[in-house]
Structure formats: C-alpha cells, structure tokens
Image (cartoon, rainbow, N blue to C red; front, top):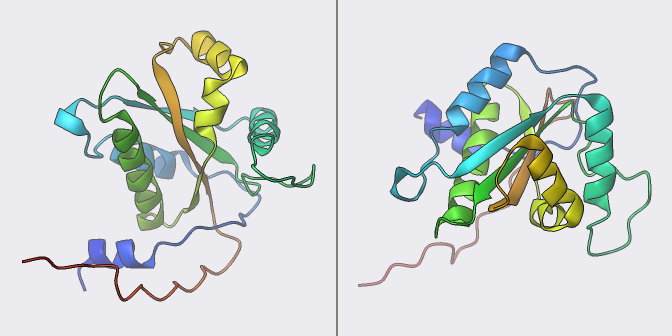
Length: 177
C-alpha cells in the first residue's frame, strides 16, 4: 500500500506521552508540513503558535479545562501531559477560515504520525480566544484581533499502543447518480 495512504489509515489520537520533548527536527518537519495544508484560494490565513514551556502548557491546560461543557476534575489534563502544544488560529476576515484552520490541524496530526510522533487534536480554542484573556494574548503575541482559535494539537512520543480503529460506518459514503 502507498505510504501516504497507510499513514492516513493508521493514524490515531494518542493520549499518553513519554516524559521527553520531541526533537527539533521532528517539530520542524511537522510545522513545515502544516504550512502546506490546503486553504481557500491558497490564502494561507491560519497561524500556528508553538508552545514548549512546561509552565505555559500547564496554564493553557487549566484554561482549556475551564471550557469543558461538563464538570471535570481539577487534575484532569486535556493535553495529556504532552510536551509540545500547537495552537491553530485563523483570520476570520477570510470566508473559509474555519475550514482552512481545520485543514492545517488535519495535516499537522498526519505529519506527526508520519515521523513517529504521537498527536491529539484538542478542541475549545474557539472559546479560549473569544474570551478577554484570549484577545489579550493575541495582542501580546502581535496577532491581529481578527484571528480566532480553531484548535490545538498536542505532540509527544507515544507511551501507549495506538488504539484500534472503530469500524467504518456502512453508510459513510453515499453515491448519487
């Protein structure tokens, strides 16, 4: 089977990571590949924010946890102990910004898998960056206020076996004449 197809079919969300940072080479490869994600009209409206400082990741974990729609324990880590956090933002002035950001997220997780790095796509970035704190962070980072949170990707070397895939739904594909 073609390696790209194999990678796409075998990638799984990883929710337990080794206590080590991913290599700079792996990170660079994943990030660069993410910049090749398809975007509407090739506009490249998203931005990828990279965080590797453990204290900053811990703060973001607590902040992200506060947006869960149901109560969760205070010690629950929505980033699963990952040592690298990526935040994908996209410029809301572009009509396809949500799709563009989602495309970047999908490419990032698949690029990670291709180089042997575990990943998990994490939600609630929209809530985070719609808040006053999120808007203040955008300003601090020099990112225009028109950018919105699309999602996060956590990265690390897996400390678990990848879960088995769920069976594909029989009605997933629908042909029309």
